[in-house]
Length: 532
Image (cartoon, rainbow, N blue to C red; front, side, top):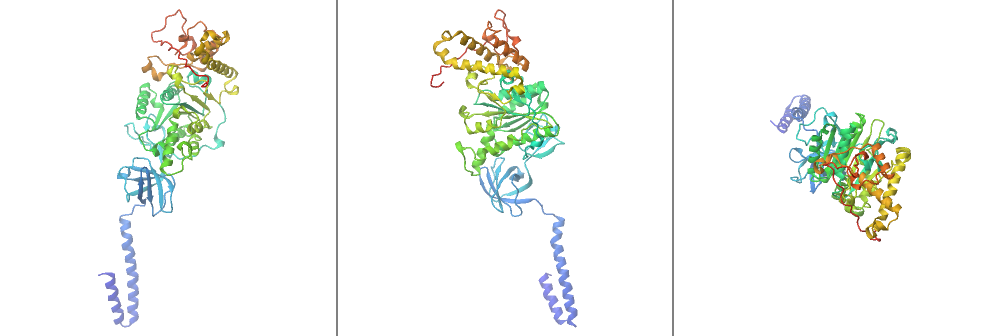
């Protein structure tokens, strides 16, 4: 019998009861009992089948990688991760709260299959990545998932990628030189331990090769550990680097994190912070020095530009996002030298159309302690590494840090190279015979210096057929000093090309080793006086 029928039956009983008071009391008891039974009926299903306490919303619009979601229960905070699609495989990161019920997010995975009205679950936490010893020698994506076809690492911690830079009180102000074993860098563009160096250059001038060589030297000869972060680069390069490091036996001291160019802009925009979170663990918890290599930081800025455009923000000059400086600072300022350890970062920077005045290149310049500019002209002449020795610079090249001998020698090398650069037009038009004896000697010294500062790399042995060389700073300085003193005046320029220490230079009457590569024909470009 329904509650309504019971009510009318009890009403009739009260009206016919004797005395009526007894009927009224019975009716009151009935009401209380019915209320209790009703409450029990409502609560019992919840106790037997508890409702999921997660915050569930629904999609109200999908525009490319931008997803708007409505939450009636509670609004997720900024940077929260949302799951939707089949089995929650489509991941969205909250970027803005539009009003009291709606949020706007950027998809970190492709959005194929999304539709209005689909359920969205709030994870209640931001994007996290694994940290710990178990991640060594592994390859991850931006979500911390292993992508090297091996089981997921066990016994790891998960940390958010959105972290603050270390406070000034924890930073170390001691300046130390980071030796790379590459002559041109150690002599003219010394790197800072715990600092940031940039490799500037267009496409195909050797940025990735130089980064790979530094990984090899850091792990194989300095017994450190490296983290390689690939942002928006080719998938093929990641696979080749993984195979190369594995064959070289240095993969056990590496961690790789990739967000390649085929992934959505949201994923490429966050992969740098994911790699940096792992590097911070080894610096702060393991007290180790970490070499963080980023290829390519321009792709990070480019991904931020795409995200900004998707969110409908007003672009600034040349289409870059108006928050480019803030976005870049949030990543770069976390790379620091603390009392616990140091993160030394070397970043490849793609320069659009070889224009160093591009806003992206200018903003990156302001964060670096050393800028290594790669020259397409030197690459075409076969002078590798193709570093522009005059445009490259380092804040560490001061007498108080590198010492008086190193500083004076570097300045003398720059003066000699600058004098040769100014005489190239005359040589191209009139020939060497029109130069004074002093100028001819300066040109000869500069050309020998250029060839001595070339170097065969370990990572290119299979292509060049030449065994890689690791040269100490002392040997590099000794070689440059002896060339400036004209000790190798009687040696052909080819004797100094692609060698390690200066002692490997062969005299003219000595036979060249079979694997010695001859010096390419010098190419002196004809430059008009207006261009010079």
